[in-house]
Structures are given as C-alpha cells and as structure tokens.
Amino acid sequence: MFNEKLLKSKMTLTEYDTFNRLSQGMGVDRRTLYDKRKGKIRFNTVDIIRIKEVLNLNDNEVMEIFFK
Image (cartoon, rainbow, N blue to C red):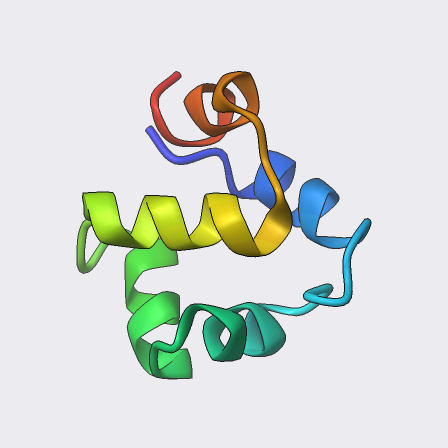
C-alpha cells in the first residue's frame, strides 16, 4: 500500500514540493508518476530508489511510504 499523504509531507520539506517537480527529479514523465500514484502502474524498485535519493529519505521512511 502506497502512503501518498506521507510522501507529500516529506516532499514539502524539499525543493521537490510538487509531484511535477518530483517527476522531474526522478527523470520520469509527470503522467507516469500520476499513474503510479493512482495505482494504474506499480512503483518498481528503481522508482522507489530514485524517490529515496531525491527526497533524502531513510530506510524507515521508505518502508512507511511504500510497504505499510
């Protein structure tokens, strides 16, 4: 289960405070990120690693956002 609310709260602490900016930081199309957020496409390992790096998340935060 993806916790979009928690991800958004982490985003607001960075320069990637919108999903458009986050998609740019990840190097993915804005529409692709939208589809992943809405469950049309699953987040893959590469996506999660990119988000972790871009937002400077720790392992616990990643677990809370993507796996709980």
